[in-house]
Image 1: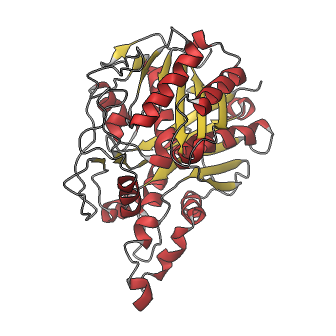
Image 2: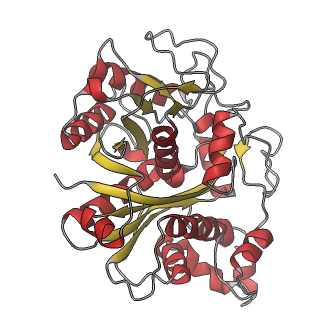
Image 3: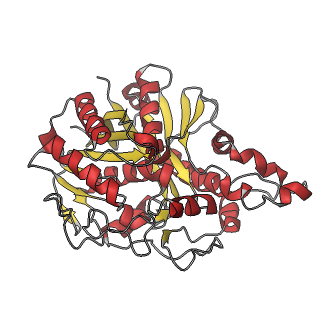
Length: 399
């Protein structure tokens, strides 16, 4: 199996506006969960979110956008993180037909279309934002801003979206279609998703507590993260070394329910099983699992049962980092991919915040303090509505 190298990464989240800031927050147990500030909602004082404390005006200034732009907040966050990833990989885009872009988003431009919904009917001033309801337009804005001229496409499979973007990028390299692919996801907070998840009754009125027996639900978040995937040939030609490898991946569907995971964790089990097979690894070779861990009653129970089905009585160290960032929806898998690679680079496991009491259904306790560890292979899980389940395995350079 050809190895898929990772040569760069970039990230923005509620715990930092670059890779270094995110890493420092993780090891120092500094979360980014707070009350809403940039959106007026009837839920402002009753829920917590992982909000990036920069206004749209500040993001526009950072990117140097003119006043007539049609970037959504989602696209702006994505452009900042994607820029970082290309810089980290020491890549330029000009004339590079072998560099592609696989983006993912679920919110897309809804933050702008809902903002100007009534104005659309009476004024032409904001109608340039209407097309942002198409998630692909947000990807095109990022791609054009970066000057990417190779294949560009968009994936939207709810909370597994960025994992599937990473998988598609790897397959484009495996098939020889591309040599380099910028992959990841971006989502901004907006009223539509806040109200939607509130209707599902899975938002917590407290800090989210993944895998805790008394967990009350998730905190929504926003952010973006991207990886640069490369073939070994491309790396060698550029004289650059990989920072890690994508050694295994899989996407499955448990076809159980529109929003709930199956109680036995069928989709999660199959995704992990197939990712291990792709990586040619046994369960005992996984050193750490960055779990999906949304802190909802259904997800944590389903994922925990799937972990036991895969690992038996020897479940490796695991933690959910969503207690730091909130659940960033389509961006979650790429944000947690960056965290998984940081764990490998720094030989450290990040803590599962807010955990107090193990679940009564099984004997699983996450890592609750920053912990040094010998890590060679890290498994990262991401599960979405519609039963769409994806698992990624990241391996240390040289392993």
